[in-house]
Length: 246
Figure: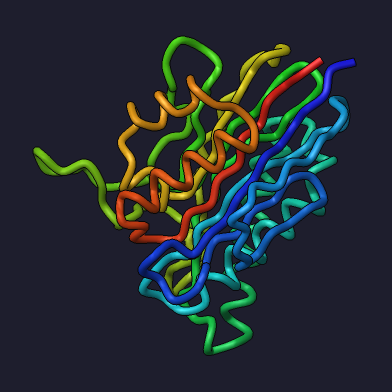
């Protein structure tokens, strides 16, 4: 019987004072919590299961509140995300929820968050994102980014930027979002990585690819985290690895 494993880790990094990242895997959420040891959960395939990371926007208030709000909304909505339209509607609801919370409390004004993840169904996977957190297909011969960065064009020689052109919340007045949605067939052996930019900014994609070729499960999650720490750990690091087994 096919099943899904989700291995997740979230860490503050070496520079930030606290963790503004959050994560959801099915009904399980991890909000502003440090887990140096990867946690692995096992789920049966069938009912839609959402796995996602959210990265509170730095330099603006209450990023951890925004990211936590979004993953908790997704945890509640996950089993109902049986179509692309349902997933798009859920992300719209998350965006509206962030703005509504910020409007109620002046201390939360302009808070916002990115989100990137996947809805795993019995025979397909829907990858989604808003912002610059990423989802990679790690199944084939080379790591392939499936999400689409909401970032301005980079100048020559520059590999990263902290700017985002779209997020959930994050503006003084309500702004609708257009989520990036991609659906693909699901097969035994498929692997996906979703992560915040605390991993992808300091660690080049080819290095991520090398680590995922060598390792799987908890060891892979640990080695990915370690690579970001060894590169200076400039930001919060949150990642989830999903794999389909039988």
